[in-house]
Length: 301
Image (tube, rainbow, N blue to C red; front, side, top):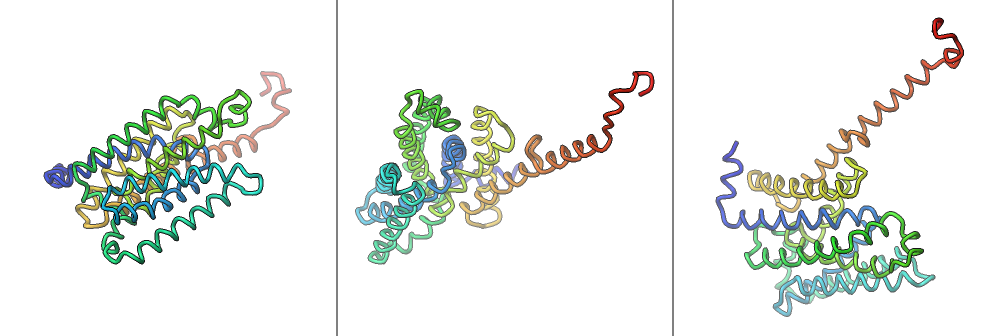
């Protein structure tokens, strides 16, 4: 059994992949909590796809894909924020317009760059086994910046997440905070591209927090559990993919999904089994409750 873990970790590329997964799992687990609480999953999906042209342009220019990806992610976040302020354009419409436009731009750019097509699979599905030491360092720096901002404004993000109307009435800049959160999501997506790819990134941002939400009602615990679930899914998915010779990104997402389904069934308060038992107890209580018993003298009950 120990050999199943020690053998793959004997390779330098697996060590780098493991470190990358722990970093990405931490930032996705934390930022994802606010994506889930604010109901931003669709916007997160749009951000994941609108970084596409930025990646292609970075490839053409010979620059790091993180630069172009974050530039288009930030542009999308700003566009969503500005368009959704119009009374005639809903947030969903703004997301849909930018999502389609930027992704189409990426497709057009790819069609003009035949040499890029060989790397298309890595972008779409991730290639965590191919990360370099420089990639890991860049991921770590961006992740630390994102986490630092998140914790510096934790009180504000929490208030907006649970009651944006109250936050607005108290004078908090709700629009600016939402915009900043979208920028943090964009940065999180950028650092996660090489781990699970453009198509699967939303699962790593949403699934661990959704799992944690089933296990607790407290935000602090939710953030801790979400991070733990994300790291466990990442590490277990990486090891399984090594031994089963499967795609690491897809296996990581399947591991996260398996943990979610496990929590959905067995969560102490919100799981399917717990809910079923609670309903059974309620049914039993109703059918064995006799109001006349409360009127009878104690000796007659």
